[in-house]
Length: 368
Ligand code: IPM
Ligand code: MG
Image 1: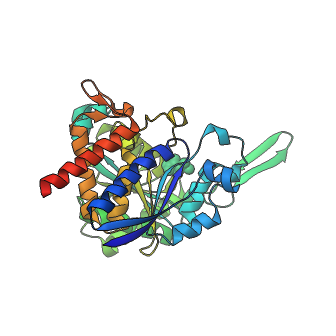
Image 2 (image 1 turned 45 degrees about the vertical axis):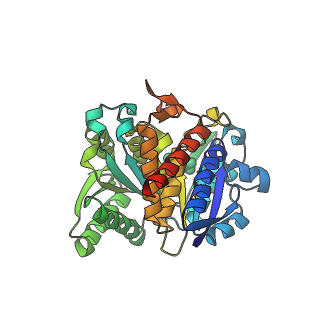
Image 3 (image 1 turned 60 degrees about the vertical axis):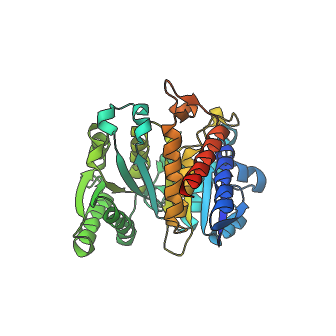
């Protein structure tokens, strides 16, 4: 029996209700498999601001550092629109990523067969889609200095942010992308704007050098980020792994997510060096419009927990089991509102979690 220390940060909006369903899956694994979880629950985002006066407290950071993995819900909501800019809920998440050194953000965009009609694109374009975006997460314009809003006088102001990357920042995320491509279909597309930005030119040169030195067996292609945005809609299946910077990754991963039909299905993993805990969170936001209504889709957060099992806890076998159960639930036409279709059964957040547990039970019964 292996015991893992997990920090759970439900956060704001729908975060707490989707996390409650993850808890059911944890409890199921503890009762039925050779694992147990020692869970510390804490706050992030607006919830942390209300409790601690900051969106990510030092004490929470220490707990995260001492854990094997951190599972997060979502942050943000209109009730914090007027808090100081450096204390807004999103700043908590950015601080967590930075302090934990989580430089590589893995965002898979996978189209489940049962959901092929949920996409706004034609089924023949997205059927079988399986791409992985590797987004740089602790550098670029999100953190570059100088930054700020300057008063120039006479009612004129100047807003500044800095796009900056070093060779080591580029190569370490590039390495993650090449390694993952080796375990997938052996192709990496690296995206920047080398035609306009020096940081993009450096990105292209460093990725090229890394490829030449260590990853000759992987196919590398370079693409301008705007073209990538277009190609994702034109022919998304041409991609295997996409590696890109923090800001382009933010945008392209939302676009890739929508190819699959619902943000409610998409997990993500943020990874640092081997000895730091990963942070796992759904790609969707806090959805304040449906918060507290038991309507949200818990699968993205459950699949994020499954990524934690795979990447931080080395339990790919348990991750496979959860992912299979998710597929079976979808094949059984059980749907939350975001992925509802004709002839399907509408499920609440908690009913979706319960259906998944039933699937896990029946998988166990079959195996016995
Ligand atoms: C994301 C989100 C965040 C980001 C926000 C909430 C700060 O959009 O994880 O993609 O921009 O990174
Ligand atoms: Mg985003």
